[in-house]
Amino acid sequence: MRRRELITLLGGAAATWPLAARARQSERVRQIGVLLPESENDLQSKARLAAFEQGLTEFGWSVGRTVRVDYRWAGGSVAGARLAGAELVELAPDVVLAVASLAVRAFQQVTRSIPMIFVGVSEPIAQGFVASLTHPGGNITGFMNLDWTFGAKWLELLSEIAPQVRRAAIVFNPDAASYVGSFAWSAEAVAARLAMEPFAAAVRQPADLEEVMKSLAREPAGGLILPPDTFTFAHRKLIVELAAHYRLPALYASRFFPAEGGLVSYGLDFTDQFRLAAGYVDRILNGAKPSELPVQRPTKFELVINLKTAKALSLAVPPTLLARADELIE
Figure (cartoon, helix red, strand yellow):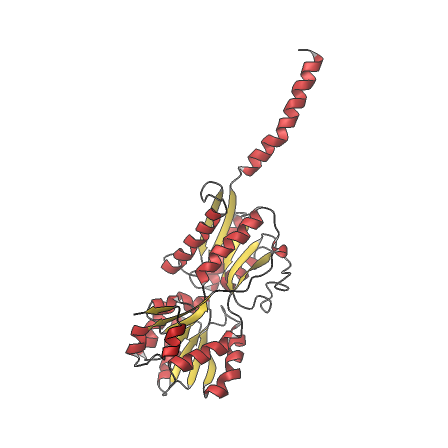
């Protein structure tokens, strides 16, 4: 082979090498780890994950082909979240999706470098997850749950749908929802005007739930408020059954409670956050850093009333409240 032909051949090959390398790089299957606080058989969680995967598809990712999604479930416990988080980090994902504060803390214990997107997290600054909403810093950003002002809104709604209530237990697990103190403070700020007494009721195991409700039912005019909390969400079936048994009007932060027989809920459209999270995951996989992506506040809220449960509790839902409801369950 002539020298000039050899140089031309080598030069042409060199020109194609970067293109081939880029092609191989673009064909690499990207990995996403998802940690959820509930159990794997939770049907509501599966509906949210379907929305997340649909969002990935809309951004051009093909689950199982161009992107792999590994799911782990905490089963409603702190220990379960820590174990599941460690398992996911060992898989070396490109980005992780942490659902609620329990999952964020579990990931923080094993990684400070893997990019993390959260959904359903209340008070992320106060919990030390981000430096600020506009400039998160570090490896974490995401989509907030409700802010502290909702404590007052929940107490007002409970008073509106069940005006006989005078004492309202704000039920939460301090290990999973340490931020609930902010909601309680907000509720206390309007309590005098409503002639109501909100108080914190800490629960750490299912048996504690019945003790709280049994104690509250011994006195007239008791009610319940359940802020966002992975523990109470995981045990929502039990909570709804106990509230019905002890005839306690209850207001929840998630529509999944009235969907399963609870009285009323007012909170964010959680499924929508999973769709939005897919957009942030897409940006991370395309080179963005979490510190460059601001934490987003919720913009879609929903008021859901279970009319059948209201009737069972002998409550007449005011027409003004019916008109404001996004969904009425009969």
